[in-house]
Amino acid sequence: MSDAESGVAAETLRDAREELADASAAVEEAGERRLRTVRDAHREATALLDRYEGRATGTGDFRAYVEFQEKFVELVEELPEDLPAREAFEAANEHLDQRRLGEDDFDRARELLEPAADRAALLGEREDARERYETVRRDARRRRRELDDRIDELERLQRLGEADLDAPVERLRDPVASYNEAVEEAWREFRRTASARELFRVVEASEAYPLAAFEQPPSDLRAYVETTPAGEEPIPTLLEYADYSTSKLSHYVDDPGALRTRVSTGRTYLERLDAEPLTVSWPPPSADRLRYRAAELVSVVARFAPEEVVAEARRLRRLPDEVAYEHLRETALARDELDADERERLERGAVEAELSAARDERERIERALAETGS
Image (cartoon, rainbow, N blue to C red; front, side, top):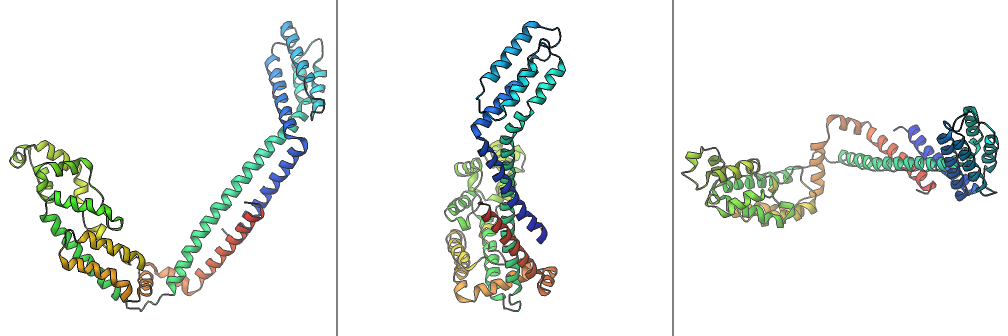
């Protein structure tokens, strides 16, 4: 949105608020209860005209003609004397007081009732103004949220642009890469040799550590592994068994159908059950998050990995206190995230200009929201 467009957006919000104020004032001046009475009476009068027009005209149904006139007279006589536009109902009633009515008389009665319709329309105009104001205000708030996100994005980009691209990020990368390689290898070995039952218990225990938790297995697969002898086999063996013919599989398990059903339906889960939940991303997370996560990683990794792998996790927990962590992390983020176009925009000041424009636009919208009582 350009400066001009954002200015229009703010002005539109003010205009919508003024329109609502004017429409509300018009209703208040006329009296909302009285306008509702006008609206109800106009609807009833129009309904009578529509209902009897075909029967009470010309030489048609005399009984319908009398009934129509009586009901219309009764409607008008029951209206309050000070009702806005009461004269419109009286004029229509007077016009309909004839020995014979034609279709043009019904049309004329509708025309005479228009002042009442106009008065009743004040209620609808207020509702329309309120809906428009709410829509414009909602749009302004949504745009403000969009600008908040854009400002955060540009500020982050600007901060990355200020990073020291020559800083020795290997002081972060090497410990992270070393740990990731070690835990991935340890998990592959554990998955290859441990029973599915034992592996599932590690997975289940990881639920207590949200920052190092595995996705849990399907309940029917977990129950099968826990309660049958097949659960004592490693996962690769179970996946291999599931591909056997029934006659071949019967040599290994008592119920080939149960194994094939449980393992086949859980195949995707079993094949994807790797060490990814235990690895650390690159660029790494913030210092506080790494401390908390590494502490949880130690607890989970210690359940299946050799001590040297657990030591790698402990090293990660100490890392933020041993190096200029956030400084190096900003460099890592900048190298990873800034592409050539973004660097060029930073160098020529385009990001700073976009940030200034976004802040100005947000300020205009914020001011308009405050002025209109939003």
